[in-house]
Length: 235
Length: 305
Image (cartoon, rainbow over all chains, first blue to last red; front, side, top):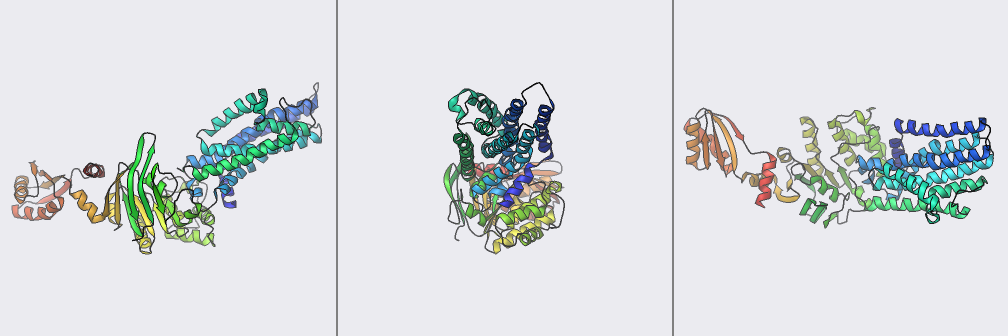
């Protein structure tokens, strides 16, 4: 599986992607520095908003989307997937290797900047722990989901952005039932509860449920990606 | 012959577009050429044979097994697809090493080097594949199909982009692999290229299998159709008359330095032309088929079946 993983990882690390998304990561840290050095506002609340409103709601999902949708989507589109597919390798390994490669990039470019932002803002270790747990779980779930999306649909980037904006940022925040199917809300809940931030995000769930949602999403996504690789057609 | 590839009544359509229809054949060890014009359905058929795509109808068995979702079977198949894209940042050796590792070969480094040497590429070449010419890419694709020594090789237009010497080498290699007992299926849209495989031929046109047999049978089948030829000569009228008397042409149109004839028996015409020219004192400068492009040959075969 390491050969698959390293091949996908190398194919994902293009200079353009790293620079563009690295800039998004820098914004998180810059915002945190402004929080630390600024005055005349509730620093703890504002620091949480940077982590929650930018880190978990924008940076982690967008970075995960860009890399994960390309992990299998790019080789499917340029038809090099055949060189990975037509080998005696279990399909679950290919699905895991692709998700793992995307996660490997999402951690330093999205998860780590969120944690650094939490630390730089200087409001305490609880926010740092909350940011680390929430961002990491979000990155794991999003990379698994978007990896499958990239394999199954064309223009996965556009579809993924539509999902993030419409479902995660709108529907799940309004409708309580939809919140139970939201990776964003569950991981924001984890961060808020660990940071002991009050108030909790709207439609927040209990801690066990918040952990269960991204975990189940990850497993289901890997299973579906594996099925797509087994049953789908390779160009 | 024990068939290694069995294709039964396979059809494939994309919406209302029929790519393949009712294709059936069996292939055993040796070289088999799949001949057809561009867009005939050769690549679609190859994708189905290798398990990359589902047939819309019919079935395919490879070594007695269904190739769809059969990862274990891929260890016994090598495919060189038609598309040019490779992992552009890799060197040829890295690309081959990846293939060898995914095939769980005991010595991937050696297998990679051997496969590259077989196609006359330097395993130590440090340049990335992005810098490779079309011919070099073609050879890299061949090497990755060969690296694990598969029983079945499916090669989609493998001679495209190769220079004449490399083509000769590749054809020799295909024949040698066939003689070793491997099943080698090679697609091409060039009739003369296929002739040199010295193999069994399947002719596919407009998604249908329109002919099969050895090269001579296919050539005769193609020769059976009415042909239009232009013969360059210094005595066109006399030559035309001689050919008509010999009964090998059905019509002739005389021009200043040539005669255009129509024949329905190309082999008889080929046998007679030199003798008629000698008897009529005509000097021949050229014999040019005017409708010998493959498209018209395939169109004739489709109509005739």
